[in-house]
Length: 148
Length: 333
Image (cartoon, rainbow over all chains, first blue to last red; front, side, top):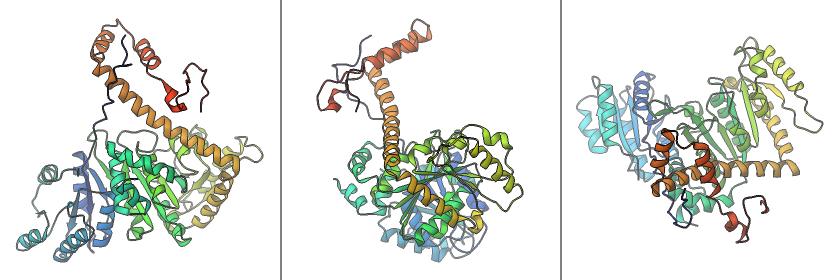
């Protein structure tokens, strides 16, 4: 059997195995985390690494966790009505930390009128009641790519 | 030293986070940075925490972190959760119990998925611990996946290993099965306010006393705690301090360092050699014909592997160019 000796084949570096990493969090004061947990699980089943941070997160906590975990996207569940504060605040913090490449999306009880304003401020997508789990998984798979 | 390396040595969180992800994702450029950081490692104290799922590992890590911060130590936490073998995805939820440290600049938390690696850690754990070490964390806590019977890997990585046991899980036979005793430097009976805590403590103490520890050897203490209410954490940290003193004794520390070096090297070689052997066979057009021959039982994998291994190594380059053959003549260094 011939061996590799003398022919010097460059070791082919193993192909990188980037996985999508998403932080799923619940900012604000409402305690209804069922939706966030269902999304976390659906994303896991779609092959995503989900960092789940639990309830009652401040925007500062979310952005700090997103930085330490080097995520590609942040998904927020907001049912408290505070979306017009929480989303823009997180966008400001992401910009301050030069993390503009992190895609911010979310869902919850969010009036239709608020959605264009949120998107104009930099929220990538807002899902409202009635959105299917598959829609959200498809969105993540298409829109969010692991960073270079 | 490249720019990323310099930023990490200066304690830059974001640069460190990005390198950690690159290492986890096996990006080749990340290894270049790690090579440069390696000689800046070895300063941190590494504490392993293991135990069955639900034993309270995250909660305890959270408590320990609070106390370490009060002492003024900076803390790195590597928390590992399992990857789904079906989808390749994971839910990393250890942060939930560590929220009180989310805004503390002195605490860095990295969640990792096992990605199919066995032994309680992820493949990248040692690399990531090294990055935290280089960035100057005083104490690094490693929380293993919740398994509980076979996480021997953590032993070689951590200076001190805590094994969490909860009352009411299994009988004394569970306790004498191999695995748990060998890896524990300190046993923690967590949720010690529950029924059966005293019994669990006695069983483990009996098991420890039957193990024939010699004079001067470290004998794992069995402590009780209720991590949820912070009961017993102070005593636990005192025991950790005592073990740290023991392991930092002259002979012990150099033995630990060599053992850790051995694991680091063997783990990396394992992956790299296999990749190189397989890709070289393939590049020479040998892989598929060999597999076909094996499938027809004309060749066997034992002979092929022997030939591949015997013809692959020339180690004299590691020895400053002096000849050191693999047949036992050379001085192993």
